Amino acid sequence: MKLLLEKQKEHIKAFFKKVRNFIFHNEIIYAATSRIISIAFYGYIMFVKFTSIISIELPKNYNEIQKEPVIFCFWHGRLMAPIIARKCTSKVSVLLSQGKDAELVVLLMRMFKVGTIRGSAARNRQDKGGASSFKQMVRMLKEQKENIAIAPDGPIGPRMRVASGVAMLSLITGAKVVALTVSARPKIIFNTWDKFLFLLPFSKIRVKFENPVAPYDCNNNRKELETYRSEIENVMISLTHEIDKKMKTKLISPEDVDKKNNPFKRKIN
Image (cartoon, rainbow, N blue to C red):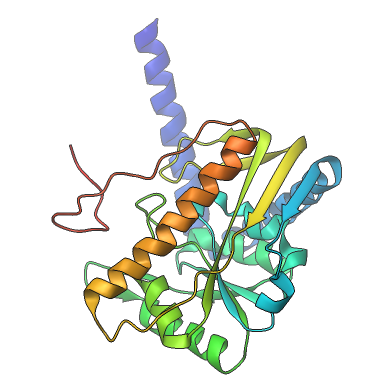
């Protein structure tokens, strides 16, 4: 019986994989499907906001902070934080990967009047728009005076580990880093690499913005750059654990990394 159930699960997985591949390889069907899903998800989020008790905690000097462009940072698993707290941010654009699976998020962000920047880290020595998107973010922060929102552990992890590019962007532009996160009760935590938090209707939702982390002169010193990166990471982890404790939910730990060989490489046992 157990073996039969396992085979059924495998058949179901294979079926959905075929459906996914068919949709992804058909541009017209994919565009239509993405549009329908994004509209449905927008409606769902609005329903969650309408039926839930939402509290948003801001730094005391938040109005002063917003007079200059900042870099909003949230974990990939808490992607719903900037959406729920959209009214608390002025003009902002979020960094998203160039993969097809991000198209749905792009459409959703547009509905919430959030701009998008496409690009991701290079893999196998192939640039996936990371260099051009970094230049675009520098220009937006310095020249256009527009806020940037980034999930510094995305798009592939490791979970709750800040990539050095965020620290570099802050140092080059002089923009402060403002961490934010969301927690809720009840909620669903998906068993994905980022432990994605999915909000539910009729829940208590809490969003918090942390005090900004200001950049300092690292003099192109890698050790000092790593210190600044680590400071941003620690602030984000502490903020997430603090708000999860207040909501009396299970704490999610950062993913282990092999720091000896590569600080951003997943640890393989």
